[in-house]
Length: 85
Image 1 (tube, rainbow, N blue to C red):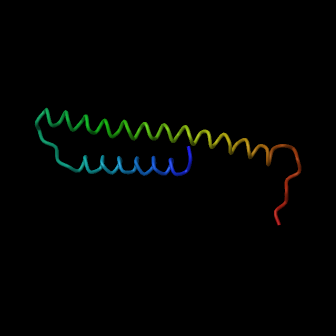
Image 2: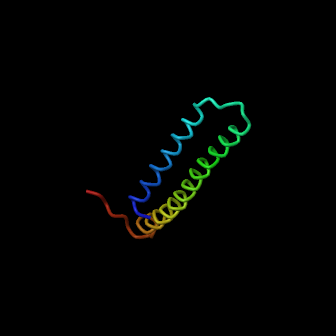
């Protein structure tokens, strides 16, 4: 996943989180049908946020593994460390 795709997903997630805040600030009606529809809409937003978070978490775990490998090669390989000037 490239940087632009990650940014697009993060922006989408932030937009959905904002929709949830707006959804929560709107006073609901006491009508069961409207409450049920409201709950369903909230769940759909939460589910999409959760899916994006899981997708990004997988990407982050891959990145962490690459960083670990690079750190091990650079600093823990037993070779003398390069001194910075």
